[in-house]
Image (cartoon, rainbow, N blue to C red):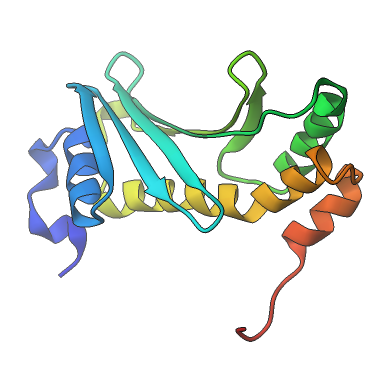
Length: 166
C-alpha cells in the first residue's frame, strides 16, 4: 500500500501529510503552527533543518532546507559563484545563501492552484529532493569554502558518478 493510500487525501491539510511522513520516518519534528512544521532530517554529512509551510493565499507548499556553512568572509564570493554553478544543474528547487544567518538554504515551492491537493508521494519527493541535493552539493560547497578550490573544480566532486559500492 502506498503512503497516500493510508488516508483520504482530499480532506487532509498538506502539513498533516508532512507530519504523517515525519512520524513514519521517525524524524524529529515540531508542528510550529497549523500551516507550518519544522523537522530535523539526518543526512550523511550533517543534520538538515527542514521547514514546510502552507500558504492558503497563494496555494503554495513552501519548503526550505537549511544547514550552517560559516565561510570566512573572503570566501563568500567563491561560495556565491559555486551556488550559481550548482543552480544551473538543479531543475526543482535552488540554493541560496543567507549571509546574516550563515545558512545555506535549499528552497522549493509546490504550487497547488485551483484547489489541487498534494499527495504524500509528491511531498515525500520534495523532501527527498531537498535532502539529496544538500547531500550531493555539500562536499563541493565545503571544498570551495574551506579547501579554497575553485567552484568549477569543487563541482567535479558533486557531478562525478560513483560506480559500485565501497
